Amino acid sequence: MTSVAVPAWTRRRMLALVERNVMIYRRSITPLLNALVEPILYLLSIGVGVGLLVGTVPGVDVPYAAYVAPAILATTAMNTAFNQTSFGVFHRMRIEKTYEAILPTPLSVTDIAVGEVASAMINALLTSVGFLAVMAIGGLVTSAGALLALPASLLIAYAFAAGGLAVTTYLRDFPDFQYIQLFMLPMYLFATTFYPLSVYPEAVRPLIQALPLYHSIELVREPALGHLGWGLLSAALYLVAFGSIAMWVATHRMTRAMLR
Image (tube, rainbow, N blue to C red):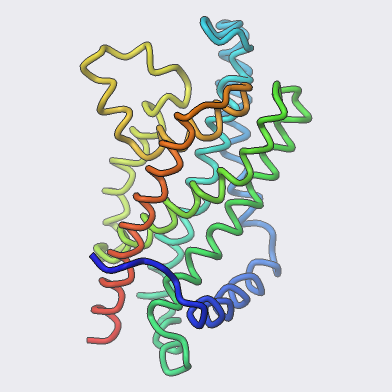
């Protein structure tokens, strides 16, 4: 497998695509606000609503809402990044034909791929900052370690933006997005977003721990609850590996599709 390291000249050129995306998004903050509405509703309905029935999470000794909030922050970064490089890139590739207009310029397919992932990471960071602010206003920040959610959100965004880009190269038409939800929605519900790993039978736990969202949640939740340990390093390495493999697949498939 070839390296996924990004040369300096590619980093400079992909900034042109990042600038283009920023110019589009700065005309309207609606996409970013939309990315915040759903997680806030989940926090209010499940974190706060169900939390009134649950009370304190056993073994963690924090209110249920404070336990759920960091996980929802991780899923916010995931969804923001994944949606931009899946639906957004598919639309630019198949409908708007944006990349056909870009390729005659000095930008390469790799520049486009890296630029799209970088743009998704920026948007994911912005939505994560917004959700962290909501957590602080709601009194759900129980440790200064919650600030580590911001660099963690960048790593989560990298993994899922690259994953979304790779998946998009396999999509044939818009109905294929339904297949994505067959994986994304169950992962969201069962990757310890709303309850700890200990509630699962022993035989099921390795399957949960193999999910990229599980490691994303661990990377945000543990510091937010004041727990720092080597497990965070393994979660970070998992996401780096996941994102790097996905990035390799995405760039190679995009190059083959666009330059054939």
